[in-house]
Amino acid sequence: MTVTALLGEIADVGRDGRRGGYSRHGFAPVEGELRTWFVEQAQRRGLDVRTDRNGNLWAWWGTPGPNAVITGSHLDSVPGGGAFDGPLGVAASLSAVDLLRSGGFQPGRPLAIGVFSEEEGGRFGVPCLGSRLMTGSLDPDAARRLTDSDGITLAEAASSAGVDPARFGRDDEALADIGCFVELHVEQGRAMDLLDDRPSVAVASSILAHGRWRFTVTGVGNHAGTTEVPDRRDPMLPAAAAVLAARRALGGRAGARATVGRLTPTPGGTNVIASSVDFWLDARAPEEAPVREVVEEITAAARAAAAEEGCELSVRQESFGDTVLFDPALRDRLAAELGGVPVLPTGAGHDAGILASRVPTAMLFVRNPTGISHAPAEHAEPADCEAGAAALARTLESLCRDEP
Ligand code: HGY
Ligand code: MN
Ligand code: MN
Image 1 (cartoon, protein in one colour):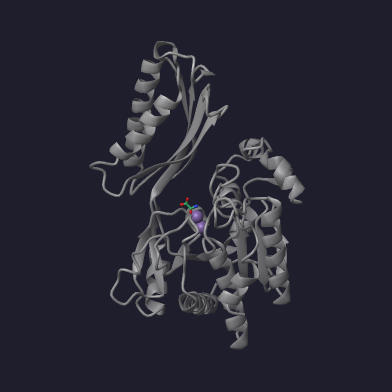
Image 2: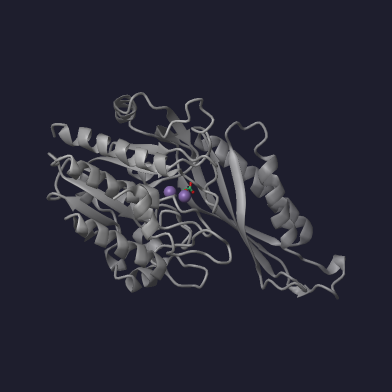
């Protein structure tokens, strides 16, 4: 099946009528529909599908074992996300299996498609949840206590999705079987489209260091019409100071990014001065140091504004990942075997970035002509999607020929 046909099968799953795009969050019923679709597609191809202790799916071509070649990606999205971030990698993996099989290929090493849980952290706030649990970079007790905006814990949501949260944790046994991992992903940016030959496929070199911080400003809730300025303790002002500081802090720090995309006042009434405001900072940079500097600068601005307004401020780091440099030998080999395709850095985090700390990892990008991601305008042309699957098939065939 083509990638386009596979993506067409899930095109109506999880559409978000209010935000546009898709909202497909970890262990929610909509993501469950996508998991069911993947399992059916994998079983139709004779793959043996297993769910690991962290809710990640693994569709095996051949008996699981050491030196396995793994591909795949994720099915969940950000709120109002695009159609390609995650599902393109999963669909391309299925299509690559079809291409390999139609050419009479039989893997000389175990080969599997992985589908990782809650990569976006769109529901429980921690990105790459399934791969972080698997590699031991997320404490299982802390994970079980994570809650979504309705107060449902990850433990409850996983149980409802048929995954036992008591089993969450580092999975050295599964990791020991992985010889290498190659994730295909839609490009998130326009670098490929700005190249003269506008290539369909590129290889990843690195991922920015990035983290997430939760800020909570506490003031005094009151009436918007009867409270004079001297009597106000409005938490929205320190929050506003932080949002403006996020842009200022990037000055002079090449490649740094800081975003506040999520801000929740309590109680959230039009004629009410909020009693508290929660907002989340996403900060990234080529190295860890500038990320920390940016966060400190923003925190200082929020703290000064909170002191002036008579509010309290608390800040908590929710996740952090250092710069990822993909395996150089794998990177260069893939680029060469694919005909000298470009090698590009990315600002986006991926499960491949988490696994890179434990196994040789690489990524393939498929050109995105809009350059937009995490929004409905995210796009990849059908011809480029099919070229991506063909490139992935060639890559998997080559890797499976390696002697263990
Ligand atoms: O946030 C990211 O960079 C990724 O898309 N999860
Ligand atoms: Mn994403
Ligand atoms: Mn992704």
